[in-house]
Image (spheres, rainbow, N blue to C red):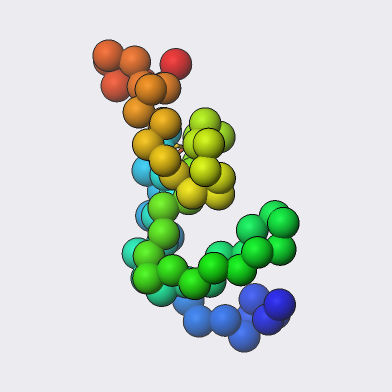
Length: 70
Ligand code: FES
């Protein structure tokens, strides 16, 4: 893996009680060592996804009707 100081800056968008979005081409190395290249990616920030590290929309079930995380 490249040292962080040799990598270009990356934009990361963090949604409240939702996904962490990287809106540009990136390489994802999963916990099992699998490497995937993506044009953009939404990573699960809530822990509820059945498809980690990616968001599968399960975070929407964690939002109460007053739009706060339960
Ligand atoms: S952030 Fe979407 S399922 Fe976790």
